[in-house]
Image 1 (tube, rainbow, N blue to C red):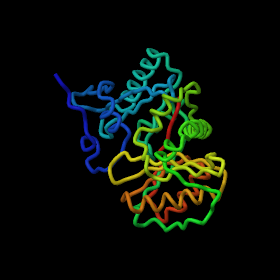
Image 2 (tube, one colour):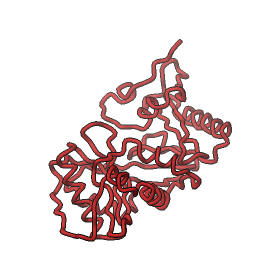
Image 3 (tube, rainbow, N blue to C red):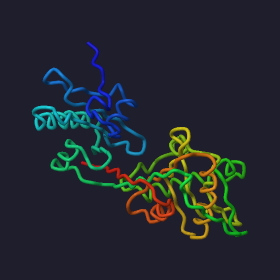
Image 4 (cartoon, one colour):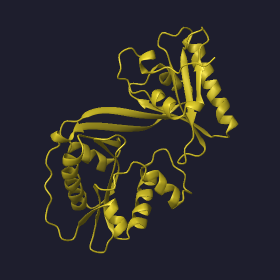
Length: 281
């Protein structure tokens, strides 16, 4: 008998509730496990692996708030996940979700899981973005990733973006990623046309801010780096002009300790904030 996977409205009658489990079930349907000890679906779990943490089992799990014997079901789900980790010789279990955490994830913190990373997610309509003026600065040139490729600077872009990602990652990524693998990861859904880097007269990248487009009409800023304040300001000014004319909403995904990311958040005006937390055992 084929079991219909639960949807958002199955567990949560009043969406939206952007729980990780619903995204994960759609992306990894073959890795879903459904728990129905009492005849109806009481919970689900799903696992996956990625190139950035090759020795970790990533998972999402959710238990119906109305399910009976939740404590026993919590233990059963975690026991199954530990068996999977042993099967794949994984050294860590990783799960992420939006705050406030649901009951199962709260329970995980009593089982050795610790908060490892907090991301601030800020979303605003681009029509509400405060205008950012570009300053005349001959020593700084702002380019898109498409322009970088034409200028022969793409290899430098790959190296600097990988260094920035590894330096900022709280959950340490794989250190032996090839440039080919990194290019495939970083360029997926990357907006090539938006101004993304600032370079100096020697064609060295001074600042970098990458925007992605998971769905039409929106943009997400996920990786920024740069130590030159003027270059950072110039880049943001050019990005703001592009965003205002090309998309309707923009979101930022930055760690709570990312000062440069926080600076961008402060320039968004009055965005809507949410928090995304990652726990590791």
